[in-house]
Amino acid sequence: MICSSAKPAALHALVLVVGQSELQTGLRPWGKLKWNVVRERARTVLHPEQAEMQQALNKALAEVQEGMAAAKRALLDRCEMQEYEEGKFRSLREPPPGRPLSSTFSLPANAAAHLPR
Image 1 (cartoon, one colour):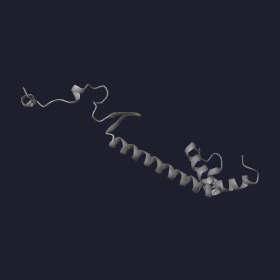
Image 2 (cartoon, one colour):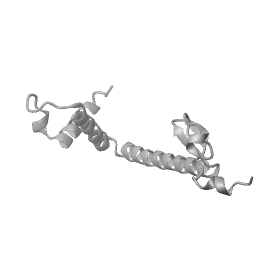
Image 3 (cartoon, helix red, strand yellow):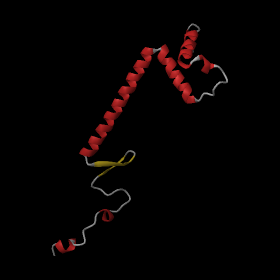
Image 4 (tube, helix red, strand yellow):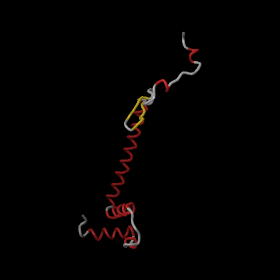
């Protein structure tokens, strides 16, 4: 809840961000996305330090997610593993799930001639 002294400042920030004509009723129907943009801009105007901190946190989160994805790829590569479904892994040396080993690997037609008798 906004205290009574902050309400005029919040309204002033909203008018600065959006413009007075767009705030008048009946001119345009506003969707949820547009209100989210307005809220974000008003928050940036009213609390610039908080907005900067949020941007820094979002950037750090993206970097951590990229690092985790890179570590996962490196680990799977090192262990010769593959993720075939979300959270399910298998060795690259095993056939894909649901396929028998014989259908995955086949000998060339002339291989029988090279086998020892």
